[in-house]
Image (cartoon, rainbow, N blue to C red; front, side, top):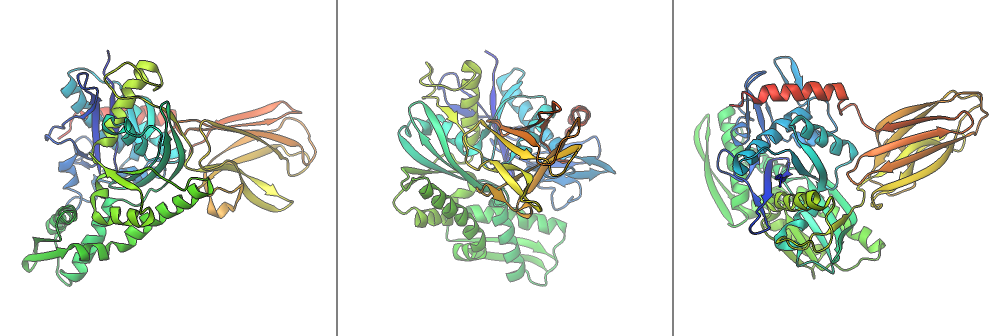
Amino acid sequence: MEKVIGIDLGTTNSAVAFVDPFTGKGECISNKEGSNLTASAVCFQNREEVMIGNTARDCKIIYPDTTVTLVKRLMGTEKVAAIIDEKEYSPQQVSALILKSLKEDAENELEQKIKKVVITVPAYFDSNRRQATMEAAVQAGFEVLDLLDEPVAALYHADTIKNHAGKTVLIFDLGGGTLDLVCARVTEEAIDEIVISGDNYCGGSDWDNALIEYIKTTYLKNIDLDAAAEQELANKAEMAKKALSKKNEIKFTVMTGNGRKEIKITREEFENCTEKLLNRAMTVLEDMKETLIEKGIDHLDQIILCGGATRMPQIEQGIAEIYPDVEIFGKDRDQAVAKGAAIYAEAFVKEKQPTVKRESKVSTIKKLNRVTSRSYGIVAFIGDNERKVCNMILQNSQLPAIQEEVFYTHYDNQKQVSIEVFESAANNYYEEISEALEIGKCFLDIDGNIPQHSPIIVSMRLEENGMLYIHGYEESGNTEVTAHMQTQALLSEDDLIIEKQQVDDIYVKVV
């Protein structure tokens, strides 16, 4: 059977996995450097040559203008990730180069061409970020079977899912760039998502940056660092963060303009200088706990940790303070998402959709029932003059979600209706426009003269993969409009074709 793979496209590191046919478990594939983790970094030597992965990551400070890291944070929100020799490269192109490198590693390991993939995304990703991920995958030459929420992928990991039937679990995923929380009820038949929450700008890299700033202001005050020293400090700060997960103290040296400087950091210092980040993460968890209580869920059976940043002791301690009586479990944290994606991908191909108790060496494969991480609505007049976002699909609604509402023209003989679509993290029927984010708009042209307050029927459909579709209809003139919402950060079909060719051309000369 044609091989399929799962990819954890991470903010700081990515991984690719397949299902071992003998064990039925997900296994991560080693990259060209022999590691199961590939840094999500691209360094452009020029328009034609690039470095990808760990070597590229180490160029970030020495070549800041030509090295792209944390590109996942730009997906679906920015049009340009880098400008090299006056040429612009989109976040999708940069991500495609990373995906193409992972694809090549998989093909070398499995000794066959790979086309089909399941790619994981933060559960808290909105529709535009998901669409941008799809565009990157297309540029890398993949056929995307599905986009799978990262915390749920960890549940599909064969070593853990068999133990959770009949339980309500919360997956706490703190990776290099994002915090992602999903609470789900696991049955013999399915995984039912209940609540999704998170923070797209809170991850292990932010802890690194906080520690670097602390070292500079405390131990290296008024000391100059050249680019090489800055890079050394960044690398050793990350090393120290990891070491302090097991030790109470770590020593290292950094070359400065005044010679090599010894630095000693205690765990207490690290936790003090990153306290604001911990509070930020725990606030997300506390808010989620309140939402769960509102839904009648005041008990969790287990909290599952994934993402390398959850190894910091302060994370587990903070969670235990909020949920003192719940078992906290973490295993294979860096690779569980990729391995779970591979398990899900194989099930998807064999059965089109994971179902119950498939005859396989793989443990029970669950059907996934998803919810949305955002509310989606359109702008309308409330009364005669006040405009607000009227949410049609509310946060944590079951997917796919379809909702139809009737709105009305604002004045006589209106010839066009603007359907402005917004998203928000609020769970209210009405939201201030300033508090929501516009993700796109379409226009309904009206054929004929109609009076004020004539009905305009708008339907909204949010698919399981997070893609959003809008349909507007005016009955008397039999006019309609259908649109797939996207922002300017996304690509047109022509742009996608052009960028894919550019990615193919660049990848021929990977350094």
